[in-house]
Length: 116
Image (tube, rainbow, N blue to C red; front, side, top):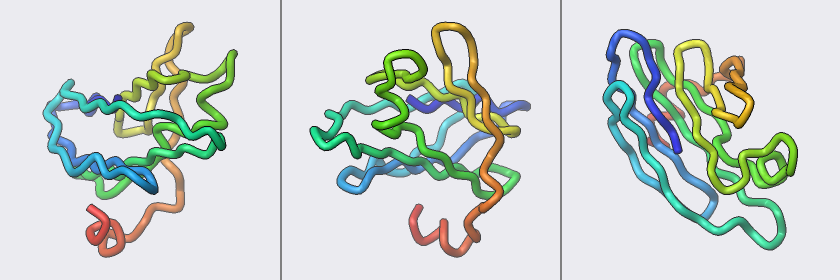
């Protein structure tokens, strides 16, 4: 699940997909969210990633990485809830929020525009 947690009521464009499934482009108002269901791969290589766009340009992150998220102690298992903030994405965990900075290797708008 991906939720718009941007300040100031900003709308956010989001496009989530995996190698096999495209969740599509969505426009989320403040606190709106999208979610989807899937079955993790038997091989342990399921990956969902999202591109985000709002006033600051383009951002991206992996929202489900099977190897990382199926860990018994640190993973979110089959229910990963991400808050998207200006400073970076935050994963809601049982013991609080795990917040990260956006990757420095931001894609160019032309490249991301083709994928959105």
